[in-house]
Image (cartoon, rainbow, N blue to C red; front, side, top):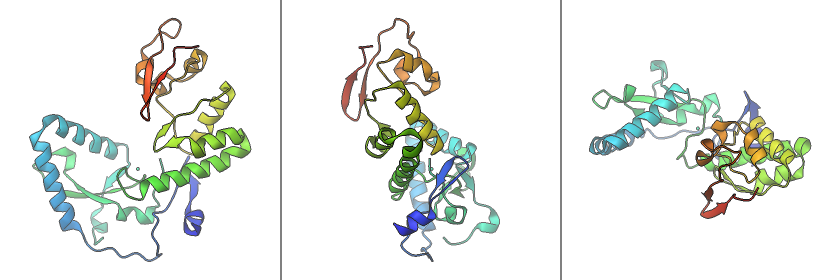
Length: 231
């Protein structure tokens, strides 16, 4: 915990947290051959389903276009997603990919350059620690209830909580933004609150509604069906 507490910092609107290695000096074996075999298996799977291929290529392409990942510079080729990764640890998060999603091309090495990736064993704990740090900072400015929501009402990237006032909702959103977390897919039984939320941040079934008269939908979150019909 001491290493995590000392290593976390706020930069560019996001928390940056190092990978939770036990030792300061880390030497990992060269597993490029295993990564290569995994890439060939992934290629075979993509060739069997055009939809799967299109979705997968679009995801990786968007990750590279958003500069969450980059091609490894040739001078850095040697052995060896929102919470940021320190610059000196990005080579620990390498992967193989086909340039521009062209499966007939040669595989090239890429690495995560900004964020802890979804799927890494350490990523959930890194995100959770950053969220709890956001809660500690939020308590001073937005109060203990907002801080408790951040600590106790998130499961991975879902938040399910009944909040009493519109001010608390605004405080929760602002606290999250300061920590680099942007809340989206909003659903609420108060139409005035929904109207204050940008359309792109509302729940999918709410985006197209006329909030003046359309009925609010029944939503499903964390296995629970919720009715927002009351206003």
